[in-house]
Length: 261
Image 1 (tube, rainbow, N blue to C red):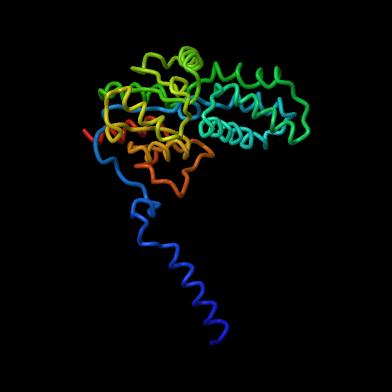
Image 2: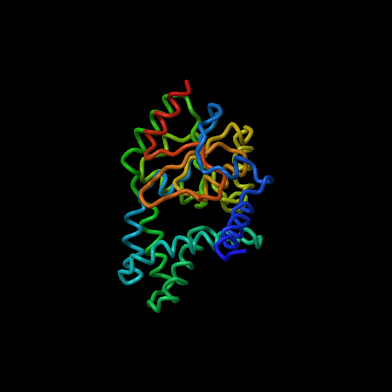
């Protein structure tokens, strides 16, 4: 058999193997699906989804000697080790993990950084982050539509309370939920099923709104509906169950849900 024909046959076999009939259409699809029903409760992630992290990015970048290129590595390291805590059945506050993740990134890149300076770079700006410009209007419109709004975050209960008070968001939310209460970080499925149970609803009656692909992935795996907020630099995870839709702002989310009425 000629070499070219052998190569084409091999490629066909390999490609055919990536389309196993055991894979569901939902898992294989990269398209987004409309909301199947009107949610009873809308859960919101907080940092980046509602609050603008730019001030903290500047502070953390300065702590790393101006190495702003290391910020994505710091955030992914923080998320990585929060999940290490979860799978090893340990727990530390998200802020504590963030400080130690920053120390790890600094050490890898030979940047002098003390634990006190790392904490100052993260915790101080984190407490007073402003909301994105679209957030208050979008949340008010959702409240006016009669939705129950709940925050669901990896941050501590006290931390989110302080953030909401400083950002002027407290009045929009019916309840604040933190994984601190169960010591299991998102995107573990149990974090979402716990949140739904706390609100006395089934997961399919909940809508998770987040600017992180890992967050919408966890919510969908738990049986929730999910909307991805495409904040700058954020994308969904291609191998996850697709979110039900994508918006750029919370006001666009309000438009989408208003159309369900």
